[in-house]
Length: 400
Image (cartoon, rainbow, N blue to C red; front, side, top):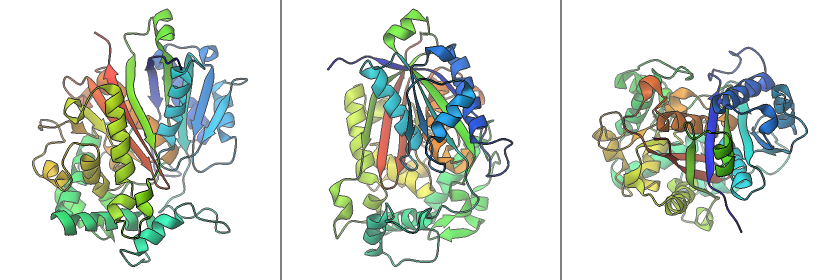
């Protein structure tokens, strides 16, 4: 099977905002993000050969409706829904099309128009996709009246505390860091520099999680243009090209459903670790080579767990990175979530993975303005959806 080198040559996004605060509707936001990505690439609409549209909360063929608003019709459009990893799943499919010669130029776009409040069950007359995950969690912790997602991730945090000695303050420091980072992000839903005390004193949602450690529901869109080496050459796009050198998608491993499965595994530790190892192997890089990371901090707990899953820390030692400030500017590790992450940038489910992609491309092109990580050459993206799917992508700057 022949394969092509693949590059992101343009990215774009809308500002993220709380549900109901943005003018327009999802087709307007998707068109805006797609237009920005195409303009960033210098690519004309008729050069896009395939498109992949990611969303969770819209009817079937909403992707076509959004892309028609952008002016794209007649081409194959694939609608993608993979829970919170939807955006990176759309990117994964666009890259597969280019990598295997189906298209020279593909567009991935993600969007979401959400309701305020915690996520809940949409359809109550059929099997819930994560029912087995909840059954597994119930064997470890009694169910409460708290929203489902904070319970799952909060319980994982309590497992980590019990086993490894992390504390609620460690998790709060993640929220503090990410809210600090988003101050410089004009696309972020929140741009307030909260103190650590503010984070700890905000209302408790569940277990160690307070409100300012939880990602909000959001409206918005993001997009990326993926191209082959031939396309980059023909259109002289090397000055803005960022290569995808490794990418893997992994779904839940069988151990998640074992009788003794703990909540750390239930929220995606194993599939994230496996995807990271596969992506590193493809890329020829390891955790020590990464300069900047956008990872799935849907809750502060998850960032510490993913330090360990992604190989940035040994199991049980992720909270030590937070203690020594390793994952912020001036630290001794890669800068993690310079965008503010899901906690502060916002989390419109279908757009999140492509917003992560946009941030890393700006970083590796030296175009992140006040958020710029010095000497950033290699970036890592981690995006996960319960149910489940983990997508890990390694990017490399190629411009001289």
